[in-house]
Image (tube, rainbow, N blue to C red; front, side):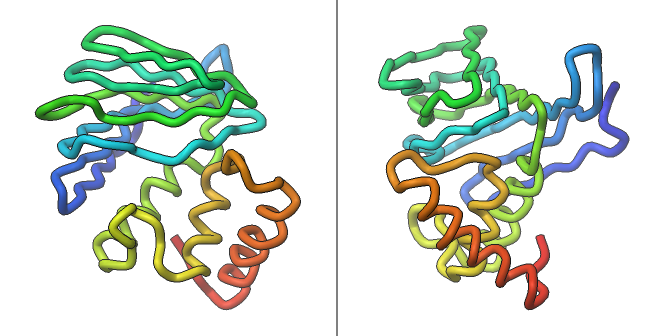
Length: 175
């Protein structure tokens, strides 16, 4: 099933995130996006998801992953799957640009996360590492990852970041 309307999020650094497909098939609900990344370096921090399975297929360029402490470097045509509860982080290792297909099952709030980060970037509300400057937006972004940051205790993340997200919702913050 193809997405009814293809959404495209274009960032000021040239990064483009395109919604390619979303729906339900015999394996369940899914979201498929394409990442076109022009800037080398980390694309996120180490994190994990209790229920999500993610897969990446590199179409162009080179992408590095650390999954549960094991490093994987993928080139064009290569694929990796990341299962629930695996701590992972990934980087664009390309000299030019990276194009990767990213599938998320079930999709959770991932598309909202991409939209929120895009919205905040357009508003110049992110720091140089792509983290929201406003703590309430930080809570909202944390809520969208459908998982946890590696390191800080879960109860602390739920209390602090989850509390910020609840407060943001209560006072009218919307993605």
